[in-house]
Length: 328
Image (cartoon, rainbow, N blue to C red):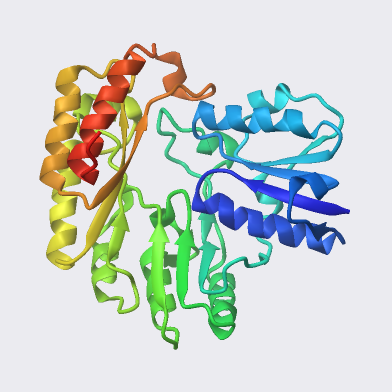
């Protein structure tokens, strides 16, 4: 049987698609270059935003005469909408531990953990990927050694909350040291971190690792304390800014990027101004800015989505111009 994989969303999904390909190859299936030539179509979904899931659901109608596998981040409520007999569902746990079929021999994504225990009020990850699970450090090191032997020059560690990694006595800082000490000329990077888990020990390790790229993605999501509480982020604006100061003292030349949501339920113009103030103080190198959209199944879905779409767009435009320097 010939298969084709559509990948939606983040780097974790790109990595997952490589593992799905390995699972299909083990079953004797072969890839094809187009969906039209496939007997089996895999939709590796991202349902962090409702609009992303709509795109996946719209694609399904094109493949009514093919076998379909829906994988990735899919809420039970979305699965319940799909009753066609030609659709099978794969949970990320079904392929998390598999050795992937690498698409890029220069850069390699290496998942070290999956899932999340934080339950941010806008996020579906704990409901789609489950609680945090970390891979054994020995398996990670073994995989990276193989990648380096095969010519990889960049290793990118992945996890929804990568700095909460723990395998028995090995935490994320210790894992980074073990990888950094491997022989060879390669770059080391990781995504994504949660500010509440950015410990002094980890910051010290980031400064000491010689192969680690001096870049850090540290999502803040909002600069207003009341909104951060409603988001269930576990820190306030001052604590976040103090954390950035500590990181920059340890690593003066580090580049820091972030994620921000504008138009969260009940976000006032004054609260948005607080986000602008934080962005100005933080001096981010760049930011991924999202206009809030409710996601069924999350705590925030119970809040009234009461910031008008035009106002969300206005705030997005202002923030994007401030941080990323784009004129709209």
